[in-house]
Amino acid sequence: MTKLLLKKIIKKNNQIKKILYKLNFKFQNYIQDGIVVLPIKFNIDSPVSIFCKGEIKIHENVCFGHNLSPKIGNGLIQLQTRKIDAKIEIGEKSKLSNNISIISNNSIKIGKNVLLGDNVSIFDSDFHSKNYLDRSKPKNKIESKEIVIEDNVLIGSKVIILKGTVIEENSIIGAGSVVCGYIPKDVIAVGVPAKVIKSISKNE
Image 1 (cartoon, rainbow, N blue to C red):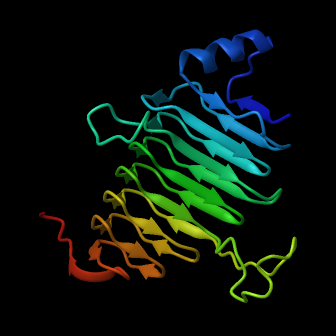
Image 2 (tube, helix red, strand yellow; image 1 turned 135 degrees about the vertical axis):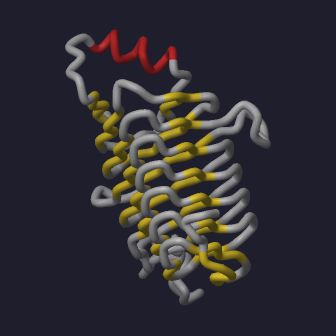
Image 3 (cartoon, rainbow, N blue to C red; image 1 turned 135 degrees about the horizontal axis):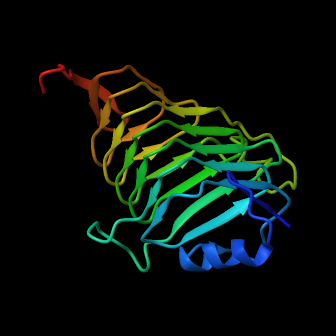
């Protein structure tokens, strides 16, 4: 059973259940052994589905979902750590819009005050072997690399962020982009693959 940890200790299990029910958190029946660290204060407008073999850590005042943003179905947000050493961390005051998928076999770290638009997907693994002969085997070679999204980054709608990506602080990724590498700080990057098109001045 996945362990739910709160930064302030709550002694009675029924108190935790009441908090989760009130916030409309959805924990799927197939959760594996793992740790989910929740703060006391966070906001939720769309249901969140968690699959956790590793660790998922949410910091204070994170927002899940947005009532005014585009939404498919109920706007479900998925957070998954699929291996016991996989980690997802979301920094304080970050805001996730609707229909977001964050799936880790390695490590995905999202900084403070990060904004994720609707239908953003963040994957730190290929999830399948590059060799087609290996794909049907129960255990095949799958590449995964850490993803880091630093503080104050804005990710537009329908962006896909792939393994090994580093997006430095204050940068913006344009809607519909695919990011698969290094994006320096204080820039705007767009396209498939995403490329820097301009710098952001402090006066903008």
